[in-house]
Structure formats: C-alpha cells, structure tokens
Amino acid sequence: MIMGVKTKLLKVFPDERGRLMEMLRSDDEIFMKFGQVYMTTAFPGVVKGWHYHKVQYDNMVVVKGMMKIVLYDSRNDSPTHKEVNEFFLGDYNPQLLQIPPLVFHGFKCVSESEALVINIPTEAYNYSLPDEYRVSPDDNDIPYDWNRKDG
Image 1: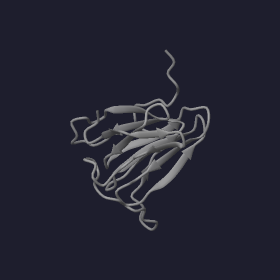
Image 2 (image 1 turned 60 degrees about the vertical axis):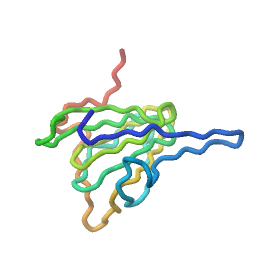
Image 3 (image 1 turned 120 degrees about the vertical axis):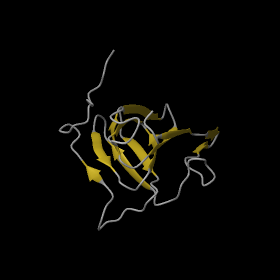
C-alpha cells in the first residue's frame, strides 16, 4: 500500500428501523483534525480525477453505490513512489480511506446507479486559494487506465 494511506473498516449497526454507520470519530487512531464535511457523487461510468492536495488529508467514505478509488504516489522521496493502489468501496465494502497530501487520487462510479461519497478532509476549503491541483483523467503521466478490466 502507498506510504501514508490508511483504511478503517466501518461498523454498521442494523436493526428493524434501518441502519447506522460510524465513519470517523475523534477517538479513532487515524483521526487528525476536522476541516469540513462534504458530499460528492458520480453517475455510472463517470471518472472524477486526478487531483492532489499539498496540505490536506482526505477521509473518504462511499455511502451509496460502489466506487473504484485509485491512488498514485507521485512523491519522489516516498518508498512507494510511482505505486498505484485501487480500492473498491461502497455498499459491499464499507471502509474509510485516508489519503495523504501529494498522493494523486480519483474515482469512478462502478455501480449501476449514482454513487455518493462523503469526504471529511482535515482542512476547510479555501475558496480564494484552494489546496487542489488537477490533471486530466486520461492525458497525464500517471500509469493507469480507467477502463474496466474483465477477466
């Protein structure tokens, strides 16, 4: 796994009324600090990526549908430099994925309906000077193909 990336298996508490799922708690080992909470979605087959942050850690949870979340370590001084990781998260695999700064990330909805992601980054979004650096999902130096890989 890429250095600094962490996962947390999520606890789901179902009963006859529905379910509750804890995502990130202030007493979790991986909790650092709170910046904000936001939701983003993707429609089936849509790729949102690539981007990275210089300061912010992301804490992503797919709460509806399934996402393929892909990471690429571009950090020259990292022992996992140029490593790619794939995570399939959502309805069938409830986990939190913590992504450190300078690690490129993107996601693709792999479910048959819209997938919904909750992100709990360590920093609040700065509208005048965003800590967000983007590259095209296809036209870049990242050794990754977003197409489905049948086997």
